[in-house]
Image (cartoon, rainbow, N blue to C red; front, top):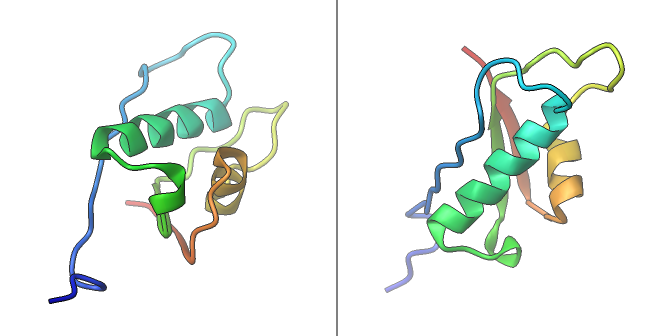
Length: 86
């Protein structure tokens, strides 16, 4: 019996909240993703999809943070990328 396309393994990655000096939006995304991958017990090579929740405006000295940029910085090659916002 194949589980392909039937289940998702999900991890949760927390980061500090609020105003944290010397941190970028991208650094929070990368930390949260790395923590979620670790929480799920996966390796980067196991990741085939990435959904980033919320779009936080970049600070004045950084570019826009997109799911593609996050995947690229983490060394992931997902076949599915998305960004969800409430």
